[in-house]
Length: 251
Image (cartoon, rainbow, N blue to C red; front, side, top):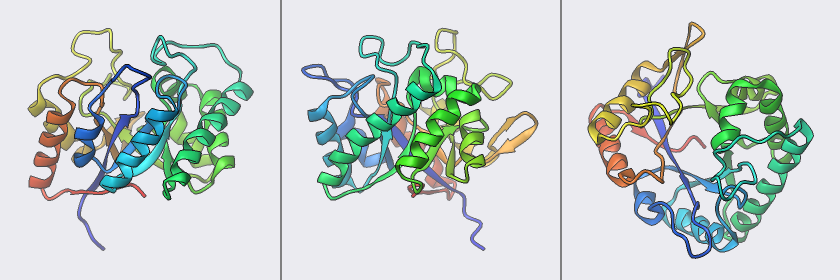
């Protein structure tokens, strides 16, 4: 059995809107293996979605949906009170939108990763996680559900028999319980590219401990809206490859 460590590098992309550009999508595509593409609710629009799908196709990058709360002004990072049924249908709506552009480009969706406040809530609240997981499973049972390592979203997907991918964040600090440190706390976001790369290596080699269980990381997120996103991606790849770690899609 091949004992080589493997990891996927994903990035949240397609988050521009209209005349407003966010992120360095074209530049970072060369260094990642999976793209989480915004579906128009927290960011993105039809033109941006189509363009981002085409960029992923040109670079051989796996395509995934990045659904969030309907909160363009707050970039999907503000919580909303929604019932399980609303969340379920909201996810279905966004998957359908991206799937249309993906199929139109002769591609297929590989995974789904919620965005922002929805991702954070699904990490801790099983009802929310289950609403998301069931929507994804009903839409396409072959889709991989991506969530915070050891989270309720991963647990829900696992209970439903879905393919899941535990995610780690090289540019973020963690709390003792395995949750991400809130962005409003000092030191929550790592800015030094070497520190980001070393954190990536540690996550892949050691995993992360959640509730006493060591979780293996399948995919690392490199935030596309980070001003140093491209530099971080280059350094992360350099450090991982130097340690003999294979970088490949979760597909």
